[in-house]
Amino acid sequence: MKEASYFPRHIRTRLLEALDDTPAVLVHGPRQSGKTTLTQRIGGERNYAYITFDDANILAAASEDPVGFVDRLPERVILDEVQRVPELFTALKRAIDQDRVAGRFLLTGSANVLLAPRLSDSLAGRMEILRLYPLAQCEIENEEAHFLDELFTGTMQLPPSGRLGNELVRRVLAGGYPEPQRRAEGRRRREWYRNYIETITQRDIRDLSRLRRLDAIPKLLKMVAGQSAHLFNVSTLAGPFQLTRPTIREYVGLLEKIFLVDVLPPWHSNRLKRLVKTPKLHLGDTGLAGVLLGLDVQQLIENRTLFGQMLETFVYNELKRQASWYENDLTFFHYRDKDQYEVDLVIEQVGGKIAGVEVKASGTVREKDFRGLKRLRQATGRKFSAGVVLYDGESVLPFGEGLFAVPIGVLWAHY
Image 1 (cartoon, one colour):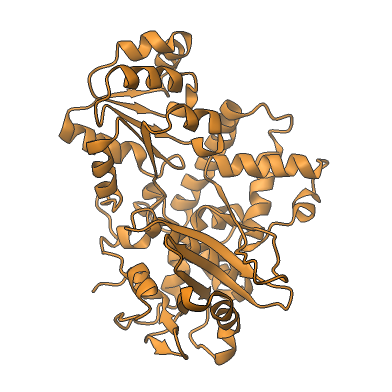
Image 2 (cartoon, helix red, strand yellow; image 1 turned 90 degrees about the vertical axis):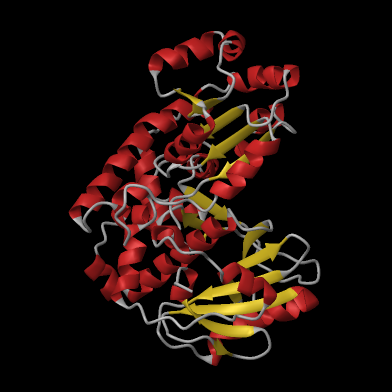
């Protein structure tokens, strides 16, 4: 694993492009995912001033007089943790309309403004939003990623990859947050994640919501970690709490808003009447999930069922991270029908191409592992580009028209 002080971020090119033609650019994502590091490096190259709303005095000044605060800002400025001052968005709109200059405001936020339409709508047409995830494995290894290109060309011209074995378990438990990558495996990484969870629940959630049962959030987050890669079952999550189903949905929505949980919608088609329409839950990072569940490497090696579940979330997170800088817009779903055919990930490219990805923790692949992908191929017809079973093996193997077994290591392999 890379131990340098800075990990190169592949979304950098998209961020620079946005700054060249858009007045305001917001980079949002979970705390400690690298937003400040990335924006400050670019800001240093382009002479941006830096202001953070984690400073209590600056926060108070901006909240008290947002218009006056924006009027006094330098010509180019980074505004860090802007979600803490929602009143600022209207003032930024006013400033942009008075002087529409590309790259004027570079914003960061640790809450998803797309889930607060009033904020995002106030800068519609004036702001581009980019999501910065924790590190993808290819960023940790400083490698380019080619898997999505091959998936949508349907060729799978990928190099062989050695079987990963226990290294794969270690990668799953390391997760993708930059700081734990610099720490020794085991106790030091777990300590960082514990402090991170406490900070998030004690500060960010208090800032965003007046919950009656703030103490329930860490327990709910642990339960979501245990249900990661499962269908969103509100009754299961509500069981240990004296909370209503709507309240649990509200709490999960809050965890989604601060990027700790992803709700993966079901893929649907008017041609198919027997599709299950329940979304799946995925925790936003498997390193975080491992600490919430109290897992170490040996425990996960021995519990193959739980490892399979964690590996699915790991692959989902990896592909979502790679998609954030991919040339074409991609949308992610899962597929399940009432005949028990399922596909872990369905990825739809703008323009209609569709690909399926199934995740298998084993080092062997069988014909039956493709049953869900074959059903998806049948359902999507000419839109189907490829179906892949990712496995812990060495070679890319064809399993019929548009179907392949692919080593999971190619997601970040050297070419």
